[in-house]
Image (cartoon, rainbow, N blue to C red; front, top):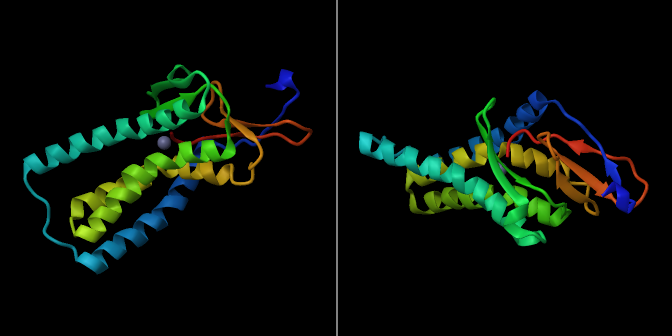
Length: 193
Ligand SMILES: [Zn+2]
């Protein structure tokens, strides 16, 4: 990108700050939505039985995989090489699964890539649970809103980069914003994927 006359914009944040910010951004939302559910539907019966929890854990694990697959599907939809530009992995030090896109995306495309897993696995089950009064769906959604904290922080970081091209950082957790003219540059650190 630099060879094509783009300049890159650089902003770095510590992993600790990124994780703190992820929590600061999602925890109030989760508390308010959780409170709203209780106001509307009451606390309800306590879920019980090993079968229920086993199923809940299986559905949670499926959700974690699906979260990364949704990131990947958005990336594949907007890149030239499609799925060949998308790589999945796990950062074993922090047990964080990630999805990496090797081609730059426009800001709206990158924003969709960040937001879609939390919309599908977080807000959607929460709303279904809220409307139907089925608690486990609502709590599941809230867990995935919390899990999307890193993505939410990423959206916050890129909010002013409307005309930039955004590329996942080639080897660090984060991204780089490219501009086709002379402006100051930023790698943004992504806390979780
Ligand atoms: Zn994510």
